[in-house]
Image 1 (cartoon, rainbow, N blue to C red):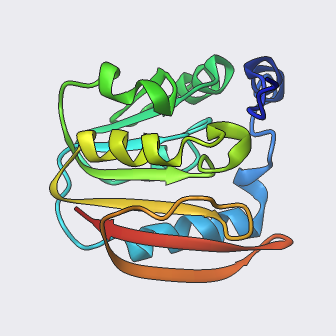
Image 2: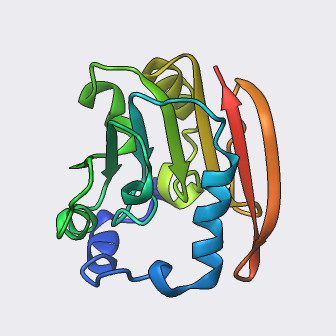
Length: 178
């Protein structure tokens, strides 16, 4: 049976370049980051997890006391850690490993650009279970994905859904509370 998940080697090759998507200079991505920050529920977050943090485009700008960014690509994490003068810890790891990686629960979990079939295959139900195990009660989950590619709807209370233009697509930002 052939897997439809993108090989890790391809991601590693992609991330050998700093900012391969051009996030730091693209007006759509700068808007996407500001949109995400503007839609976060107002609250003082203690433990934040950014799943699929890449090279830290969003993670490094979070203004919270404790932030951990994880990405499956060791190359992405290497770039994220370069000149990291923030309160962020970057770790290499898969969304499938989060319950093994962390003993603490998070009051905010961000997932951006990860919930696509090429990254999680047909594992939506497993992803729901994993997020439920690491998100504390009344914690927030924020997901941001290309609307046409997103395959997940979480079984938490959805507080907000915003769809806005992003590059050649539409982005969907969803805010949930457990």
